[in-house]
Length: 330
View 1 (cartoon, one colour):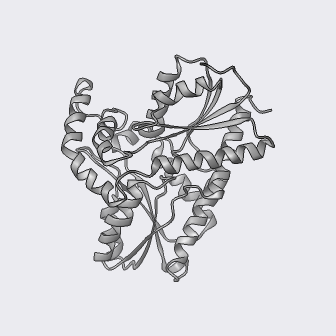
View 2 (tube, rainbow, N blue to C red):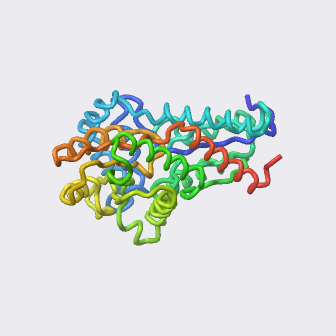
View 3 (tube, one colour):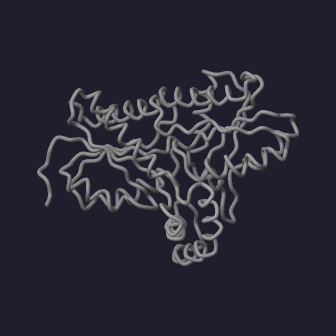
């Protein structure tokens, strides 16, 4: 039964999603590679058949990675905790137990966007702030999620206001600076004795050539960070897959270059990720850490933002501004 409409503002946090069991890895990969906004596999009519083939060929290897980090992705658990913390912050800011209800919608695994929107409508919510948890806009991340959301929400009379990037929000920058400072402290060598490597999720170069602002947004975030903390740094890109040209330098390649320069202490900052998942827990913490050790370097990772109080405050501020901009503020 549909609940009566009320004045509650819904907030929908959008994220990638991840397999919640080893059995979910193959269908998750299929969903991922079926999306032409992520990677274009031949002509459009071949996208899904090729996605099926890739998921069949790759799922066993990918399962082995997830097995090393606990048998599933933690991204839903973390995003759910972020949503709960954000809702509490919003209600405190509002000065009431009413006013906001925060939901989570994932692009490639449960709870899928197409399943969450009916739940939001059933809850009686008729206005929705949509906040992408990708700080830096790309058509392959926020763009794809918003496109799917717009397809779904057309069947529901819900007013929607979207927040598609927030790469230079002051509290987001403060949260990253805090994480970096704590990471540097792990080495006991001071900022001058630690090299910082900002590692962002890679994209096909073609996307940037076609005008995607992702790299500009990443560099703008780093620019704001380095105004607050004096650090030697480089930028690299991780998690490439498929036979296309990807952004460079790749994180694994730059490890060798930094070792040749004599870097001994390396702090990796997963700058485009706001929560832990396979890219942080396996790629950085296991794969790159081992590679760095073999090159004579000590590699540590700055903690992901997850439910950092400063980060949750950033999300609250972003949502409150979005509410004002939409004309929904009390």
